[in-house]
Image (cartoon, rainbow, N blue to C red; front, side, top):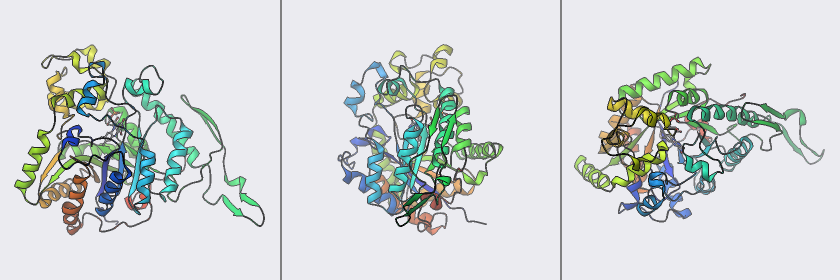
Length: 448
Ligand SMILES: Cc1cc2nc3c(=O)[nH]c(=O)nc-3n(C[C@H](O)[C@H](O)[C@H](O)COP(=O)(O)O)c2cc1C
């Protein structure tokens, strides 16, 4: 039987901070985040640590729902710079050999041909190392930037995404791998019998045409997903090869992994073709007390505004309208059309059907370094937890959130990775040339 090993993913931002908004205030954070040098350094750190891939989280607007204004977000630097991930990934590809490179693209705002072509082109340009984090977007700010009147209702966004996936996967499979002949003597470029015109007649998309990018060395980019709500999880179980989650404890992580695998199986998939990767923050030090001092400093950088601005953004609801202890009414909760997964989590952890603003702040962890479990300690302590979750069935791998960049990735690669390798739960080197080979997955979709 094939030996299971941990899959490691670096959660990156093409922004002025990591997903921890206060990270830009960290003394060690680089401020050259609009230069190729910054992203090269991250790419090098991840590849030094044999991370399977790095991926750029993305949103198509800065957070301006809080108090219906962008001032607070800009003043405090709350994830306000957002560059396009694709050109940055192309730059990173030129400075790495093995690291997988994934981008987030929204099924709500880009068309199937645009996504299919962009992602397949990226996959060629990095020699079969690309991945696509499929998201459905979440708030009205994105809708306004993209020329729509408002965001589509939560579950309908996933219906649209399903339709999009069928169209995209058909395009990706339009060319048989040996369709290109390129024979200069006979003048035959491609065998037309090996290229299929795709016709898609879905509820949301009707596309008809012949796709223009032949398959990449790994067939097509690896599909990544992170749905957390009921509808979102079904979508992830149907399409995701790598599935990101956020779990507070091992029991919950085990339950979610079991459920996701079962759901995938019910949908006709082999559950071993998907990898479940919970997120965590890590602060590592030479000793436990050094790590704890570092954590205390990192934690102290957050400002109350960070959480309020980011909760408003992600739930598509202006939190400036609520008092701290005032419960949300049923109507208000029904109107929340952003990430339902976060709302479900706050209801579950607070034990309240109608949580208050204070409950959202406490249980979502948004804007802080407690949004996902934060591992603090020396390399051994951190490796203990990562090994335990992996061995006991809570995870196939992990998404690492960086409390500051690029330093946190460098420290993880330097301290924690050798410890995991010593225990045999993490690869010593990349095994293949493509991302899908390195992940050990065989979830290539040949038909929608
Ligand atoms: C690790 C991780 C990364 C994510 N990256 C993005 C992203 O880049 N852009 C985005 O709009 N949503 C992102 N999401 C949100 C998910 O796609 C999903 O919407 C969310 O987990 C809530 O689930 P739901 O859509 O089923 O309510 C991410 C979620 C997780 C856990």
